[in-house]
Image 1 (cartoon, rainbow, N blue to C red):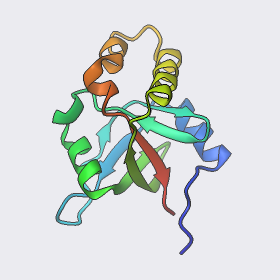
Image 2: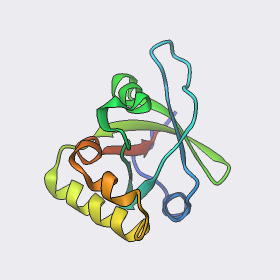
Image 3: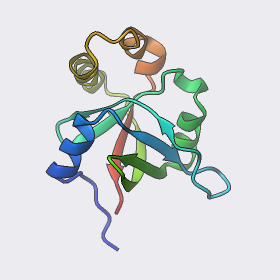
Length: 127
């Protein structure tokens, strides 16, 4: 099987424009976790997410520990890889994407706060 490392333009646009997005990292036992609704944004050709509760988020802990899982948007499931982001310039661009997509939401300021911000995760397709 060929492993994909970037989203198709159509898939990325569909996911980025939707409010509906669920994330389900694999657990240590190999099973996929319970899907969790979460915000997502796209920057260039990559999808990014942040856990509202920072490092305390169970999906985030599993995503970093195992590194793979499933995301669902618009009724389509995607097998994915999770990669932590530690590039300050990139996190600033992700901040701007959050500001643009979720402007006016009372949940936006917490997503830009240090806890969630420093736990930014890149999501790339694997198949």
